[in-house]
Image (cartoon, rainbow, N blue to C red; front, top):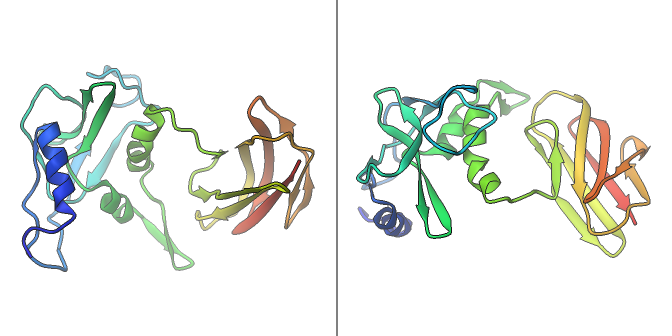
Length: 222
């Protein structure tokens, strides 16, 4: 089927943004075209946009490329041939940040090694690009971890909170620093593996650190 159902939303956004999406595959499985190398301004250099990033660099992009019709959009990452790779357009009080490639697939394919049957070594540059729209919108996660690739789902109840810590780095983390945003005053924190942990109250919750192997659970008591 040439016109896939999920492409309908892409076409609506493309009309608003002013892009020509690539031709959709007529059948699956779809083999992606050869990768493109894209670049972003290095930290400390002049950037043509007001968006500031703490981690810029270059990465390999996979997927068919869009064609941007409206050159008024701000581009803050480009392919080696100069074509726009990531662009931004102000729409009313918000903005559309458009990737003219497939960032999710590109991130998956950026893994450099496989350890314990899990891929690792993902591109930090692509990861920062993917989360940048949420950060620009002011979205704050309930838990901020000092090391990337640590999953921190939170369950909250009248009895307190449980924070599951899942380490996807394939290596133990000697010191993981966590900032938890909580809506109650904390009296005790306990690691299922380590036991009671010291913590420091903050204006939005608590600050706590611990060593982390493959997984752990923090039990936070009011």
